[in-house]
Image (cartoon, rainbow, N blue to C red):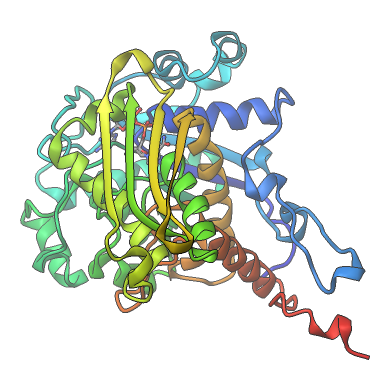
Length: 434
Ligand SMILES: NC(=O)c1ccc[n+]([C@@H]2O[C@H](COP(=O)([O-])OP(=O)(O)OC[C@H]3O[C@@H](n4cnc5c(N)ncnc54)[C@H](O)[C@@H]3O)[C@@H](O)[C@H]2O)c1
């Protein structure tokens, strides 16, 4: 690992230039020009304790690990509609028009290339800006060509790809995903089991480019692509940005469990009116999201270990498409809990959140940490980035860690490990020993 800050541009390649991607990119531009602070970004605003408490060494994360500077980030991406980034920001109406207008020139310059799309995987969308090719391998080659041209034009020292595209329908890993050889054969044979997000991921990983999956799609969570990632030293992270309701869930549930408070019902419902909500209105796309959202509680609460507290838990998640709300989602949780002698109590949460405002800083942290991982020779699944995901990727034989605070401890200890600093166990007995 080279402990000095990297010199040169870092290319951020984004399949899916919608609300999240445009809020991320415009946000970085706004922060670069001093219009705002990187609020919500762990890498930019978070601190990390080093050594013993009396040492008072608590630098900012970005001053501790050699991350790319925001000034060095350059963006490019793909979509299935021909719009420039300024138009996407205006249409998504996440950010104030005046702020977007003030960055019009720079936003218009960001390239958006035609996407690789298959409406069988995202049924609620139709695109007019789509690549055509003789087979899926040909499409992957065209994506590689886009990446090559972008790298040359911006003279990037490295690139990172982050999927911010729509949620693809639910399906399980099959034979074509079981090895790289079968997957590449499937690309040549146009195997229907290979989704567009997998084609982007293949194009990136083949070139040693780290890949993050912001949606709950299977994408890189298949043996073929984890095998390729190992062979090309590409770090992988996923799946599904942990933003609104699941963020709150993974904050509350570990606290209730820590105090041995029982839970017998957790009903979560949402109204959401952006394009993501429209895509998730398709039951097969919702199924992908539902699987991702449901997993967290079971893993945190461990009903097998705590049957008296959690074995009867009824967990339900709904997402309702409701256009008037746009990107400003409202998520309600009704939590039925019980305490001493089984006496019931309730918690109600009403989170009026902004989806893309919560997701944008996660995109920033992920691309910076994945670039760091690449330079630190870490390849394959980056479990230490679980902190950012609803459905963290792990090795098949391991269960994912969902507790936000365990995830944070893991993230910070990994940064200490990368930098050769002592890990922090919070034991602290030595303070009290003579
Ligand atoms: N905002 C959040 O809080 C949040 C949290 C977790 C996950 N996500 C996921 O992030 C993704 C993006 O969310 P969003 O709100 O920006 O949605 P969005 O609909 O605004 O943007 C998605 C974009 O992807 C494009 N697209 C779809 N398929 C494509 C393909 N094959 N190639 C290129 N472009 C493609 C669409 O045209 C659209 O512009 C969604 O999958 C969403 O589920 C968002």
